[in-house]
Image 1 (cartoon, rainbow, N blue to C red):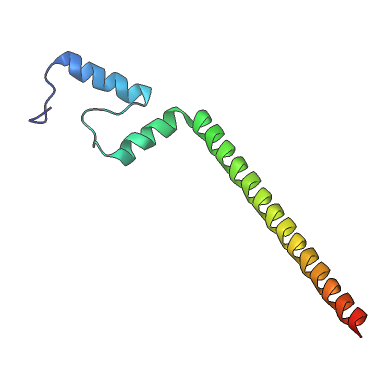
Image 2 (cartoon, rainbow, N blue to C red; image 1 turned 90 degrees about the horizontal axis):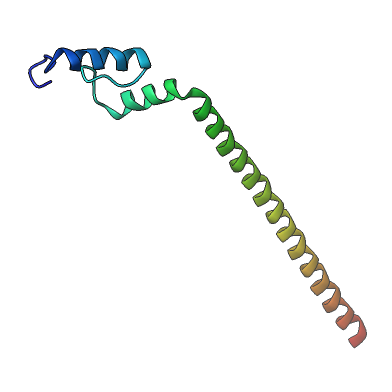
Length: 95
């Protein structure tokens, strides 16, 4: 479609069928947003499912990261407490 016309009636028929099937048409803009929009509309269930899985994985990773940070902080606090107790006992025993 270099001059704004279809090369043949078959090309026009194919573009009409693409339009009816929700696929990109040759006469339309060939931008990535246009193609993504057509893809998402055609495959909305699959895209929704994939997005749900991504959100679930991100949520689990976030929870796991916070749990690890809490356990790390608790372990550091325990080690600090143990060190403080050891130093205090040494000082008490020295007197």
